[in-house]
Image 1 (cartoon, helix red, strand yellow):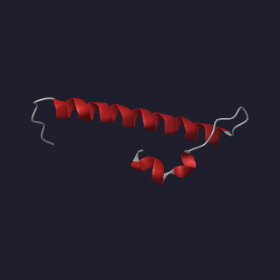
Image 2 (cartoon, one colour):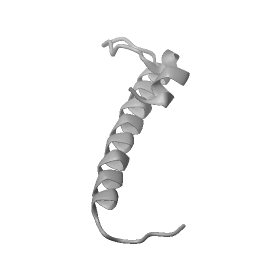
Image 3 (cartoon, helix red, strand yellow):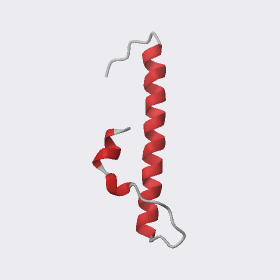
Length: 56
């Protein structure tokens, strides 16, 4: 479970046919954030599994 999800519980909204546009756009943002978190985790695993020395 991501830290972001626990900080923003109000974004956990169920989709309904008559949902308000703001609510549905918040749901879309939540889905995009979740997707980006998943991709970031995958990249982190790929980078940590490689022998590259990455300095920021």
